[in-house]
Each structure stands twice: as structure tokens, then as C-alpha cells.
Length: 270
Length: 182
Image (cartoon, rainbow over all chains, first blue to last red; front, side, top):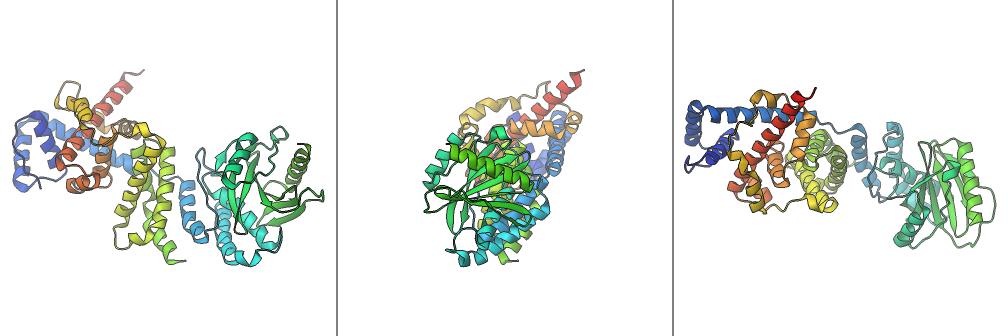
């Protein structure tokens, strides 16, 4: 508790009034402030303003709500952290709020499953069931994050060096903006215990994640992309030059096929 | 559900609105506040064991506040005023002593809209905003504020008084302008 030294100045009076207002004065000092309030109209007015301000501040404080999508992202933290497979670096712009809660919950529980079985699938080659689950989980987890990418750019000349600097890997990135699949950025997922580059494209409001998992073979063998679905997400996987690629999305399957066809044609052309 | 997840559910989730509000006061806008709250909750999850036995609300709000300071230091270095730059602050704020005619009526303050109030808070010097937030949202005592910010109690008192005085002035200004508008 604080004892006033004196009433020597207006400023000191106001300081003490604040302390009184905050219940910080001892009883004797508080009494003195009260006496002074009773006789000093301008001090009383100051006190009333402080009260009105506090009421307004409390009301404003009580009015702010955590938006639903933030709430969901935070609820997902515990689940995602428990699974602990992907490092999500949140970047800012607008939040991805358009995904249904059920998808989020599915992603969270799937992520937990993935950790528990992840070890078993290692070394079985590309596109086995475990890897497929991890690939889809990576995409789903990205939907949970504030942003589905770690680096935001529609320029492949930005995304490519970013991968290079992060992972020393340089997967093909094809500019499909004119075909209606603009590049929006890149991120890093963990598949089979390894960090892999993921380029992120958009189709209207849908995201397409394209994972590039390095392999030893030198070239695109040209064979057809292997289709699969998992938890409602369509996946197309194919072997490209130096990488096994998997595209994951919730766009219509024929659109994903179109994406893959255009992408592979573009990759071959440059 | 694991122990940690349960604890996170119990400690963090019920106080998100307040966490958001605190971050909004400190950063001055909603989208930055969302970033801060998300960061803070990640930290909170990492340190969730230390929430045992603590007051959950106070525990979370302290993390949010610290995260906000770190975040602002990183994202807008110029916005963070070094807290012991008191000369500047004292100089800038002696107007509060002046009980001039421009002091708004109580009724005017009561009418302020929360958007305007938030703008006024955002316009305060960071050093004032800190004490105001610690006092009005976290409801810490002067002693606790002094300890938290490592400043003398006298400084807490003067900053708090000035924070309030400046807010009153700004709010009065806004409301008067609102009335003048056609």
C-alpha cells in the first residue's frame, strides 16, 4: 500500500486519484482522497471520467472474440503436436477458414495414426499405403495451418530457390497460371521421415499440394499417373525426373487429372 | 486424450477470447492479434506442464503478453518503445496535468464505440499501453506490474495515470468529431 507524500501539485493529486481508483492506497490515504473528492469538483470529474473509461475498456475487452477459425486452429495444436510429424511455419495473409470442421478433425486424428504407423512403411518404395497417408496428412495439415505454405509466391523463380536453400532440393515447378492453376507458394512436409518440398497451387478456392519425393531414377518414364483417394482427397502419383510426385487435392478428379497432364507437359517442355 | 492435451483443453481453450482481446490491445489490430495468439498457444502447449497449480487465465495471458512483445520486436522494431526511455515519455505527456477546457465530459466517454476505443489504445505509446493492459486486463497490482516490467512503482503510477489521461483525451476528441460530422 502506498502513502501519499503530499498534495503539492495537481499532477500528484491525479496520481493519487489513480491509485485510489485502483485500490492501491492504505485506508488513511484513501479517506483523504475521499475527503478531497467531496470538496474538489474538478477532481471528482476526473474520477468520473476514469470510471467511465474503465467501464468502456471492460466492455471493449468483453466484446472481442477469438474468431472461429482461429479457435479451430488452436484446438488443432494439441492434436497436431501430439502427432508431431510436420513442422508448420505459419505465414500470414488471410486465414484459410473455408474448411469444414469435420475435415479438420479428420486431419488431426489421421495425423495421430500416421505417427504410430509411420515407421513401418519406411523403405517400401513410393506410394505404398503409409506414404499415401502421410502425403494426404501433409495436405490436410496445411489446410489447418494459418497458411498452406511457408513461402508465399506466385513466382516459381522465388519458390524454387527457396526449396533449394531450405532442402538443397530443386523439384520442377511449372507455371500453370494461365491454365487456371496459379502457383501460390511452397512448404516443407515430412514424408517417410524426410523433409520434402511441396509446391502449392490453387484451383479457384481449392488447394493442390504437389509433393516431390526424391528418388534415384533419372527421368520421367512417361507412365500414367497412379490415381488413388484417401479420406475424400484425390491423389495422383507419378514418377518424374529425380522425383516421385504426388498431387493431392479436393478438386474434382477430372480437374486434378487436367492439372497433372498440364504439369507434366510443362515439366517436359522446360 | 493425453494428459497434455487435456490440460491444454482446460487451461487454454476457455480463455481464448480474452487472449485475443489482450493481443488486440497490445498489437493494435485483429490480424496481428491472431498471429500472436496462435504463436502464444503454440508456446503454451510446449510449456503446458508449468500451468499446473497456476491460475490458468493469468498463466495464459502472461504468455500472450510476452509473445506479443517478442512478436512486435520482430515484426515492427520501430513500434516498440524502449520502456526506460522516460524522458521522451514524460515530455510528451505533461499535458495531463492541464485540466483544460478540452477535457471531455464523462457522458462522452461512456458513448465511445469499441472500435474507436481500440484505435485510441493502439495510438498510445507502447510503454503506456503495457501498464494499462497489465492493470485493466490482467488486473495485476501496481507491485506486480512493477515486477513484471522491471520498473519502479512510481513509474507504474505515472504511466498508468498518463495512459488513462491520454485515452480520455483521444476518446473525447473522436466523439466530438463524430458529433460535428453531418
